[in-house]
Image (cartoon, rainbow, N blue to C red; front, side, top):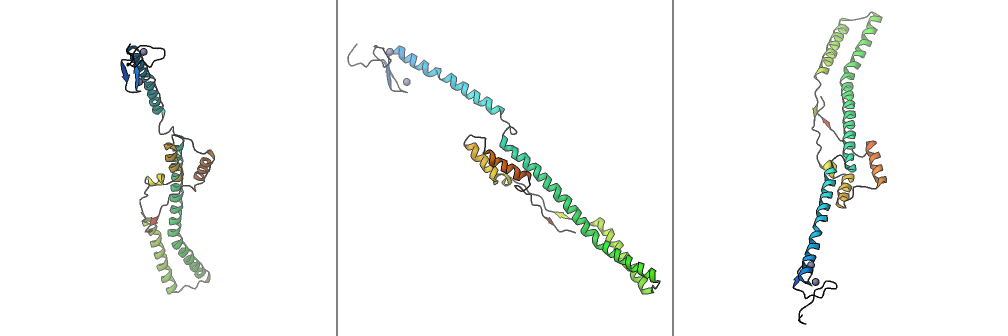
Length: 209
Ligand SMILES: [Zn+2]
Ligand SMILES: [Zn+2]
């Protein structure tokens, strides 16, 4: 063995090195070079397994399996309830507004009529006014059927979600590869949501009648 040649770096190997492994800058004899390469290649198998495991776990994840996305369902339910309440409220209010005016007139006319009957003192003018008033009231009641409203489209876009505190936190958390959030904070948000204060849908009705 020439003194200038470098020996194999493997422990207890006294054979002169025949090559240098470029990946780790180590001088090795042929046998140890093969062994070294085999050992490196062996590490590929567990890596493949690891990737497969992650792939399997990813397949298990569905849109409904992520706990924070349940907020979306609760938001939807709260929004549905808000719309239901709004429609019911507006239907009653519009109906009352339309009905009350002719109804008040009808009662007033009825009072005048009752008084005239009681006094038995009707004049031709009284009768003409009464006939005219009743016709007018009838016309107003007929107009109830013609109530028309214009509704602006309800626009819900992605900003409703992205700009909310909860989803910002979601994005933030997912960057950290964490799905859990502070339980207390989450609880507060859920309560706010259930109480209908966290998300409110604003619907404006225009051109009533
Ligand atoms: Zn190497
Ligand atoms: Zn060797």
